[in-house]
Amino acid sequence: MSAILSAVVPVFFVAAAGYVVRRRFKMDARTLSTINIYVLIPALVFDSLYARPLEWRFFGLAAISILAFTAIMTAILTLISYLSKRDREQQSSLLMTMFPNMGNYGLPVVAFAFGREEAFSLAVVYMVCSSFLQNSLGVYFAQRSYSSFWNSVIRVFYFPMMYAFVLALVFQHTGWSAPEVVSRAVELTAGAAIPVQLILLGFQIAETKLITNREVLTAAFCRLALAPVIALLVATVVGLEGLGLRVFVLQLSGPVAVGMAAYGVQFNVRPAFMASVVAWTFFLSLFTVSGVLALLYAL
Image 1 (cartoon, rainbow, N blue to C red):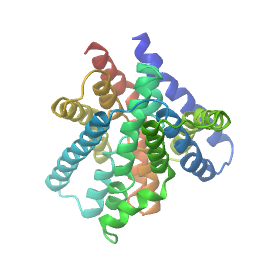
Image 2 (cartoon, one colour):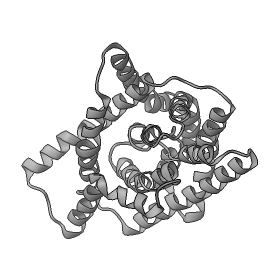
Image 3 (tube, one colour):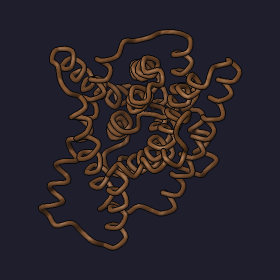
Image 4 (cartoon, one colour):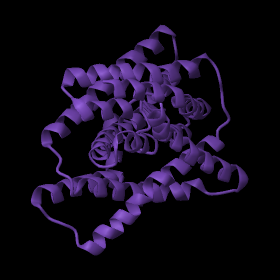
């Protein structure tokens, strides 16, 4: 129990600090978010991977697992929308809630639960694979009434995280090493990524007016209770084992990605619903993720 709490609770403390600061002061969260997306996350991805060997087999399994999980969740949530007779906008917003917060929530929890070295690198790979879908398929769901899927895919390449990932792979497989002054600068920058992401999460919650209804609770159930079961089944079928399986399931058990609430605002897709689901899944994840982690420790 002590190990579980020490892995999950620190995330809430840092987010709470962001919440208090945002409630007390008028701050521009967008500036901090821009720095995070274009500076901190690319540095974190590169620093986590470039000096650590990454097996191509694992990368392939990671990509297949994320795709399979996303396909299954899309089918289930589409069926729920059909059976409950939801309109197109309601269906889109429900589909957007399938994407977990693998960055500012999943990464620190994995680091605290399984260690900063190998487990963290695996978590970064899963995050990159998932981010590709979040920033393409997630955007498509948000604006599918007036934009094509391929236009949404192209948006992925606006984010430097993808280029940092490719550059890290190049360094790995060529044996190149960055000059010490560069590697130290990247390491310093990467160290700020997770705290800033958690503070941003607190900002987001501070700006949210919570809605509590059956639709919000249904989305929360699918994200926090159904998703871990699907993730475990997918990981088993695909062939993930050991630490790779544990990290995969834990990463996909977290709350709804904060970016989905941002897309809700940007594309006017039920922003109040999206923000409420993000907030409620974050609060409830203290219990659900702790339960998932207890089962993973027992495996």
